[in-house]
Image 1 (cartoon, rainbow, N blue to C red):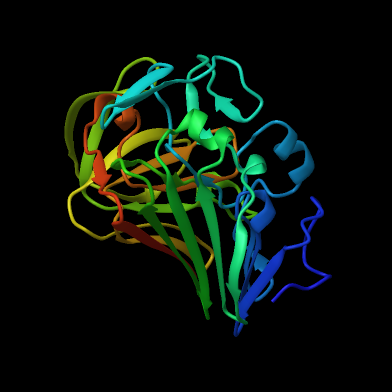
Image 2: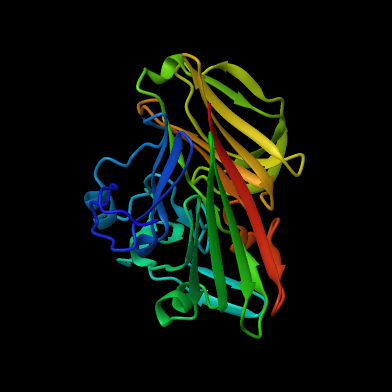
Length: 306
């Protein structure tokens, strides 16, 4: 339920804290349903949440951001799916662009105002009606998004449902980009990745369509640097980091077919990114699923803090 003492530097009147036992989380529905805190026993698991005002002004990803209508990059400014196309602007205040000027992560969280649908002590449900001109200019496929965040002792589960509300199929390419870390130096973190397919990327970090077997990893992070895309081999997968008796895991439970692991060697955070399609899927259509009018697609992941 909404409380006045929760972290709320952006002044969101709908800021909501949910909790169960020793675990609590905070979301800002008026700012993209961004997750800005996940604590167990008072220990913060999320990263890049220290200066939300600056991050919002710069369209930077922080905490647990929802990436819609596409996660990661597009190779160009034009795409066409289901007979409907769009040209994205090369410069926009509501979009994010990577270092090469390519569109990245869709319509950014500071510009997406969700409506709270239901709140209990442990669960927050919010909805976003994708029928407004600003959204349709980026993604011309009417739909309704429902996001439910549920806290249990030691975990946070996030279920996202997309319902096609128009007369056209809706492509599915959303994702999340949660940032995690420990206070200790990242070189001493232990990272565990499952066996997957490693996507071959070009010089712009765009998948080429090729991939190769990835045997998994169970080792110290050390000075390893990641910005790698993977395709899951099974419907479910778990990725985790651990240090000093603590562990943070991301369980991809259903609906997610891909993940991006992002761990720059000079930063004390990393991201395990649930993705419903690979990067650039709106253009390549690789792994792209469509939701028929009136139908609903859903995907769920869980963050465990141990």
